[in-house]
Image (cartoon, rainbow, N blue to C red; front, side, top):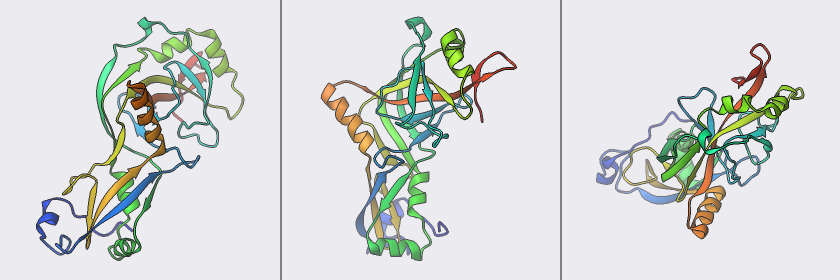
Length: 256
């Protein structure tokens, strides 16, 4: 799959070429977030600048400085089953100035289920096009005007807390921990198709204009919570796996 050609741009609108026919039909394709729990998205964003730092969508309001125990069944990412085991003591001086940001970030890993009509699926097979792969590789998270609250020196703060260091130093075999570096707050959070096309969230294939409809229960919950509270809500936290490095005598980022 994936050997065919995707066609984007104004040519589809003008009916130019075999793949951009005026006879194309409009169809809705539902893209659903799925994950280990069935209703939470497994959307993980790679964050540049800090080695080992990741970000994950979550309805759990985790604060910077939270130490989490990772679920051994899902070592690559945090999910709702990850348990908070300790909260670092923080003060305002431990935090960087609040950042206002426009989140338009590519999703680098996600579990999506793509549902389309039988004739659309037949057309995709005929052209050797993998729509699920196309959507997964070209989806972005959008949240305009969100803010981020982050620790200035997360590892430094952790290593000054003897209780936190003890928890990580005396971890049992197979247990892993992660430290929350920052939390983003926002509203009107959505997923969108990132490629240029004749219309937003639209993919053109021979005979069809596929209008992608993203449905994600977690984003629905977050947006509903923001609307009812009339304020921004925590929707994403940034974390890095950590370990006790005996050669250094301190907690460091676990890059394994």
